[in-house]
View (cartoon, rainbow, N blue to C red):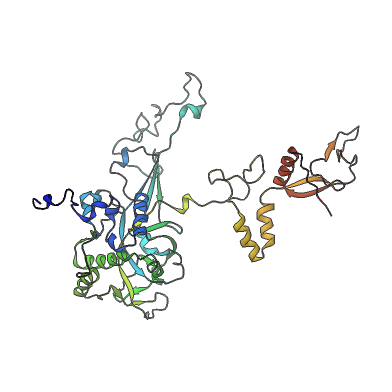
Length: 442
């Protein structure tokens, strides 16, 4: 150091100093394409992990927590440096790289149903709900109708709930007992998002029964089936190495250092982990012979099979699905409003319209853009073609109201037709700038 100080003014202590905290958490990040590392830096913030240790004292609006977190078998030194074992973000999963059912296309992944039933990736959401008793009772000024607590005369709640309205500390809660907390359990389901630590994200497409899952010679079935088409274009070689490293770690009973820039061309990672797998009696390349879970036949190709640390992300289908039959409409256009919270619709745009036209689904297109949108009945004069001029004539002693066109001085040509309400709005807007729309009705 004394000699180098005469030559240099600044020195990098280690190669990983350029990486952020999240960047330092990626195992073998030097083997990955850089955009994938950036994706993981974003997804690391979205994990359904362990947000804090003092959950019972928190009043956050929403917290996500995984119920059975694990420490990764393959991790960089920064993981221990930042004490990430106190806040684990995922679990070790047995991953088979195989296109098995067809349900794993386009980044979808098949989960082992039995693994999920045993607790794989189970999580829960903690929500804080504020109840304003004054608003609930409709109190004004100094008026106080409701107070949080237990009535001293309430014999049913005595022994279960204290006078302050909260349960006694350490009391055993039985079935149907009053409790003032609610945990929203979120077990994995079709549509939930998962990701490895290499930017390989995907959604669960199926919970496949274990009896139909492919199995190895030793009888192991994977927790996750990962499509092999996810590797060539993404070039996440770090995930392949993690799979081999995780497998060798479980076999030999130790944890691997996954800090980047530890391997070189002279000492390749594949060679190092290949030898460890070979020593344990497994294939040098991390592959295994597998058998079809449907008919029991041996598969022609060797399947890449190992242990990868997987994260469950907070994006769940239960929070995102949107359904609407009829609901609130915009006052101006009479078209469905936007937004999931408002029970609104999803915009059917020009490109969606083009798709239906290409399919020749004309009636479906009319249903989406007209019947289910802003269909309305309008009075139109066939003589002058105006949609705005027909008016209701005041009856002179006659009970039945009659529509007439003031421009034509008659109601004989006024007809009722179906049209989008927004078209009438357009006609009114154009009339405001002295432009008239004339309709030719047959």
